[in-house]
Image (cartoon, rainbow, N blue to C red; front, side, top):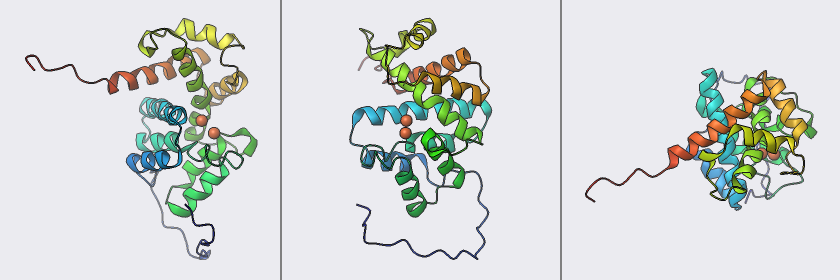
Length: 214
Ligand SMILES: [Fe+2]
Ligand SMILES: [Fe+2]
Protein backbone atom coordinates (compact mmCIF):
# COMPACT_ATOMS: atom_id res chain seq x y z
CA UNK A 1 0.00 0.00 0.00
CA UNK A 2 2.78 2.39 0.79
CA UNK A 3 4.91 1.29 -2.22
CA UNK A 4 8.04 0.08 -0.47
CA UNK A 5 10.19 0.72 -3.51
CA UNK A 6 9.22 4.36 -3.71
CA UNK A 7 11.71 6.48 -1.80
CA UNK A 8 10.75 9.60 0.06
CA UNK A 9 11.87 12.72 -1.75
CA UNK A 10 15.08 14.21 -0.36
CA UNK A 11 14.46 17.13 1.95
CA UNK A 12 15.97 20.55 1.46
CA UNK A 13 17.31 20.94 4.94
CA UNK A 14 18.48 24.50 4.50
CA UNK A 15 14.99 25.67 3.62
CA UNK A 16 13.29 27.20 6.64
CA UNK A 17 10.00 25.65 7.69
CA UNK A 18 6.94 27.76 7.09
CA UNK A 19 5.34 28.83 10.37
CA UNK A 20 2.32 26.70 11.15
CA UNK A 21 -0.52 27.26 13.58
CA UNK A 22 -1.29 24.59 16.15
CA UNK A 23 -3.54 22.61 13.89
CA UNK A 24 -3.80 18.94 13.15
CA UNK A 25 -2.66 19.24 9.53
CA UNK A 26 -5.54 17.06 8.52
CA UNK A 27 -9.14 17.34 9.47
CA UNK A 28 -11.09 14.85 11.53
CA UNK A 29 -12.76 13.21 8.54
CA UNK A 30 -9.43 12.60 6.82
CA UNK A 31 -7.96 11.15 10.01
CA UNK A 32 -11.02 8.94 10.47
CA UNK A 33 -10.78 7.66 6.88
CA UNK A 34 -7.06 6.92 7.31
CA UNK A 35 -7.73 5.06 10.55
CA UNK A 36 -10.49 2.94 8.97
CA UNK A 37 -8.31 2.12 5.99
CA UNK A 38 -5.51 0.77 8.20
CA UNK A 39 -7.62 -0.80 10.96
CA UNK A 40 -9.98 -3.62 9.97
CA UNK A 41 -10.75 -4.67 13.56
CA UNK A 42 -13.96 -3.34 15.10
CA UNK A 43 -12.53 -3.37 18.62
CA UNK A 44 -9.47 -1.31 17.72
CA UNK A 45 -11.63 1.13 15.78
CA UNK A 46 -13.85 1.42 18.85
CA UNK A 47 -10.78 2.03 21.01
CA UNK A 48 -9.63 4.94 18.85
CA UNK A 49 -13.14 6.46 18.85
CA UNK A 50 -13.20 6.17 22.64
CA UNK A 51 -9.82 7.88 22.91
CA UNK A 52 -11.03 10.57 20.49
CA UNK A 53 -14.02 11.23 22.77
CA UNK A 54 -11.80 11.57 25.85
CA UNK A 55 -9.36 13.81 23.97
CA UNK A 56 -12.20 16.06 22.81
CA UNK A 57 -13.54 16.29 26.37
CA UNK A 58 -10.20 17.51 27.68
CA UNK A 59 -9.65 19.90 24.76
CA UNK A 60 -12.97 21.57 25.57
CA UNK A 61 -12.18 21.53 29.28
CA UNK A 62 -8.93 23.41 28.69
CA UNK A 63 -10.17 25.42 25.73
CA UNK A 64 -7.51 24.01 23.44
CA UNK A 65 -7.92 23.09 19.77
CA UNK A 66 -10.50 20.30 19.76
CA UNK A 67 -9.77 19.12 16.22
CA UNK A 68 -6.07 18.63 17.02
CA UNK A 69 -6.94 16.58 20.10
CA UNK A 70 -9.52 14.55 18.17
CA UNK A 71 -7.13 13.77 15.32
CA UNK A 72 -4.39 12.75 17.76
CA UNK A 73 -6.75 10.35 19.49
CA UNK A 74 -8.09 8.92 16.25
CA UNK A 75 -4.66 8.28 14.80
CA UNK A 76 -2.63 7.14 17.79
CA UNK A 77 -3.00 3.39 17.12
CA UNK A 78 -3.89 3.47 13.41
CA UNK A 79 -0.79 1.42 12.49
CA UNK A 80 -1.06 -1.07 15.35
CA UNK A 81 -3.02 -3.82 13.65
CA UNK A 82 -0.76 -4.14 10.62
CA UNK A 83 2.56 -3.12 12.16
CA UNK A 84 2.43 -4.14 15.82
CA UNK A 85 6.17 -4.62 16.11
CA UNK A 86 6.96 -1.16 14.74
CA UNK A 87 4.08 0.68 16.40
CA UNK A 88 3.94 3.67 16.79
CA UNK A 89 7.12 4.51 14.86
CA UNK A 90 5.69 3.09 11.63
CA UNK A 91 2.60 5.26 11.91
CA UNK A 92 4.53 8.39 12.78
CA UNK A 93 6.86 7.86 9.83
CA UNK A 94 3.86 7.36 7.54
CA UNK A 95 2.19 10.53 8.78
CA UNK A 96 5.41 12.51 8.42
CA UNK A 97 5.96 11.34 4.85
CA UNK A 98 2.38 11.42 3.56
CA UNK A 99 0.64 14.18 5.48
CA UNK A 100 1.45 17.57 6.99
CA UNK A 101 0.65 16.43 10.50
CA UNK A 102 2.51 18.87 12.77
CA UNK A 103 5.35 17.79 15.07
CA UNK A 104 3.37 18.17 18.30
CA UNK A 105 0.83 15.58 17.13
CA UNK A 106 3.59 13.20 15.99
CA UNK A 107 5.37 13.63 19.32
CA UNK A 108 2.20 12.92 21.23
CA UNK A 109 1.61 9.73 19.24
CA UNK A 110 5.17 8.60 19.90
CA UNK A 111 4.84 9.53 23.55
CA UNK A 112 1.85 7.30 24.30
CA UNK A 113 4.14 4.27 23.98
CA UNK A 114 6.46 4.38 26.98
CA UNK A 115 8.99 2.10 25.28
CA UNK A 116 9.82 4.83 22.75
CA UNK A 117 11.16 6.93 25.67
CA UNK A 118 9.68 10.01 24.05
CA UNK A 119 9.21 12.73 26.68
CA UNK A 120 5.63 13.91 27.04
CA UNK A 121 6.12 17.66 27.21
CA UNK A 122 2.88 19.07 25.87
CA UNK A 123 -0.55 18.84 27.40
CA UNK A 124 -1.65 17.13 24.18
CA UNK A 125 0.88 14.33 24.72
CA UNK A 126 0.07 14.02 28.41
CA UNK A 127 -3.64 13.84 27.73
CA UNK A 128 -3.23 11.07 25.17
CA UNK A 129 -1.12 9.04 27.57
CA UNK A 130 -3.54 9.65 30.44
CA UNK A 131 -6.68 8.56 28.57
CA UNK A 132 -5.36 5.73 26.40
CA UNK A 133 -5.32 2.84 28.89
CA UNK A 134 -8.17 4.21 30.94
CA UNK A 135 -10.66 4.13 28.06
CA UNK A 136 -9.85 0.41 27.81
CA UNK A 137 -10.87 -0.10 31.43
CA UNK A 138 -14.14 1.77 30.90
CA UNK A 139 -14.90 -0.23 27.76
CA UNK A 140 -14.22 -3.51 29.60
CA UNK A 141 -16.48 -2.41 32.47
CA UNK A 142 -19.28 -1.71 29.97
CA UNK A 143 -18.90 -5.07 28.26
CA UNK A 144 -19.44 -7.06 31.48
CA UNK A 145 -22.71 -5.28 32.20
CA UNK A 146 -25.77 -7.29 31.15
CA UNK A 147 -27.25 -4.19 29.48
CA UNK A 148 -23.90 -3.10 28.01
CA UNK A 149 -25.09 0.45 28.58
CA UNK A 150 -22.33 2.92 29.45
CA UNK A 151 -24.94 5.44 30.63
CA UNK A 152 -25.71 3.12 33.57
CA UNK A 153 -22.06 2.65 34.56
CA UNK A 154 -21.29 4.42 37.82
CA UNK A 155 -18.05 5.89 39.04
CA UNK A 156 -18.01 3.70 42.16
CA UNK A 157 -18.25 0.55 40.08
CA UNK A 158 -15.46 1.77 37.83
CA UNK A 159 -13.22 2.46 40.84
CA UNK A 160 -13.82 -1.08 42.10
CA UNK A 161 -12.95 -2.49 38.69
CA UNK A 162 -9.77 -0.46 38.69
CA UNK A 163 -8.70 -1.75 42.11
CA UNK A 164 -9.29 -5.36 41.07
CA UNK A 165 -6.14 -6.36 39.16
CA UNK A 166 -7.82 -9.51 37.82
CA UNK A 167 -10.39 -7.40 35.96
CA UNK A 168 -9.21 -6.36 32.49
CA UNK A 169 -5.73 -7.43 33.51
CA UNK A 170 -4.26 -6.03 30.30
CA UNK A 171 -4.98 -2.48 31.46
CA UNK A 172 -1.76 -1.20 32.98
CA UNK A 173 -2.85 0.35 36.30
CA UNK A 174 0.53 1.92 36.97
CA UNK A 175 0.38 3.74 33.62
CA UNK A 176 -3.13 4.95 34.31
CA UNK A 177 -2.02 6.45 37.64
CA UNK A 178 1.12 7.88 36.11
CA UNK A 179 -0.94 9.45 33.32
CA UNK A 180 -3.26 11.28 35.72
CA UNK A 181 -0.28 12.48 37.73
CA UNK A 182 1.56 13.80 34.67
CA UNK A 183 -1.62 15.55 33.61
CA UNK A 184 -1.99 17.12 37.03
CA UNK A 185 -5.53 15.84 37.50
CA UNK A 186 -6.65 14.01 40.64
CA UNK A 187 -7.07 10.35 39.76
CA UNK A 188 -10.75 10.07 40.72
CA UNK A 189 -11.57 13.28 38.89
CA UNK A 190 -9.76 11.90 35.85
CA UNK A 191 -11.80 8.67 36.04
CA UNK A 192 -14.99 10.72 36.19
CA UNK A 193 -13.91 12.90 33.27
CA UNK A 194 -13.10 9.98 30.98
CA UNK A 195 -16.32 8.18 31.91
CA UNK A 196 -18.30 11.36 31.22
CA UNK A 197 -16.56 11.80 27.87
CA UNK A 198 -17.43 8.29 26.75
CA UNK A 199 -21.00 8.57 28.03
CA UNK A 200 -21.48 11.87 26.19
CA UNK A 201 -20.25 10.29 22.96
CA UNK A 202 -22.83 7.51 23.23
CA UNK A 203 -25.62 9.95 24.05
CA UNK A 204 -24.62 12.16 21.10
CA UNK A 205 -24.65 9.16 18.76
CA UNK A 206 -28.15 8.10 19.79
CA UNK A 207 -30.65 8.32 16.95
CA UNK A 208 -33.17 11.08 17.42
CA UNK A 209 -36.58 9.91 18.64
CA UNK A 210 -39.06 9.46 15.80
CA UNK A 211 -41.16 12.46 14.98
CA UNK A 212 -44.72 12.06 16.29
CA UNK A 213 -47.11 10.79 13.68
CA UNK A 214 -44.51 9.12 11.47
FE1 LIG B 1 -0.55 2.29 21.05
FE1 LIG C 1 -4.35 3.11 22.35
